Length: 293
Image 1 (tube, rainbow, N blue to C red):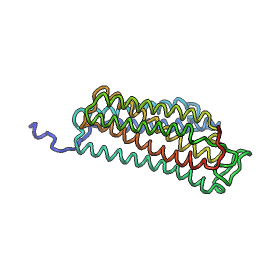
Image 2 (image 1 turned 90 degrees about the vertical axis):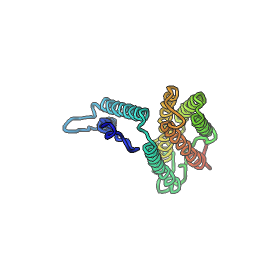
Image 3 (image 1 turned 180 degrees about the vertical axis):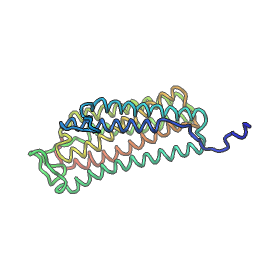
Image 4 (image 1 turned 30 degrees about the vertical axis):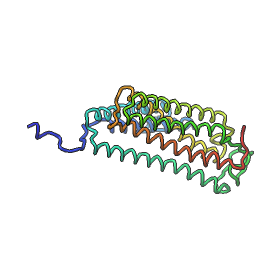
């Protein structure tokens, strides 16, 4: 009788889960809270079924965010549990890798949109620049009157930091393949520390930038591209921090460590995107412009 119910395939039929539904509810509540917040900042109302949500914008957004974060934690905890129970067979692991590749491809297209906006404005400045401040003039890129950041100061520091972090996460991966637990942990410690350092340098750079988001399309494209990359660095640092905690708990083995591998792929993707940001938005766009000191 037991043989009749034994699994004779490599696929994992997951148990019924509340997380997709709960995550959708959290995303809906968080989006409503975000819209209400923006309406509140403009002094407008945001009514839904006769209720003005703008009055409770902060709490609505916070509740939605909490639901989303709780769902993420619980769902990934279930995935880790399934891996420890042996459900991540060769076929399942292959499909997880396909999923991560598709996710990174979608992230790539996300950044393509911001690069597209930047190049469209920079290559055709006469058509794109709508100046909001009198001291700035259009027709050139960057707009005349805007002082740009020195690409070989803080941006260069951050480039070195990210390249080093790519080296340390690769060291950690090779240490894991060699079953060197100490090398794995220290490689991840250094990678997380470098990720935190990158974020700190970028925050300092933003605090001292001589232009703002609303100055012109230059500031808008600059902050959207570099800001979203900084957000991805923040997410990647958390991703690697979780891997560090799991490595210290002995979760990964040389043959089964997709969680760490996915984090390393994501981190290398962040590295590559930064190299393009540094080359074009910092270096190329600053050629002939006034450098702020």
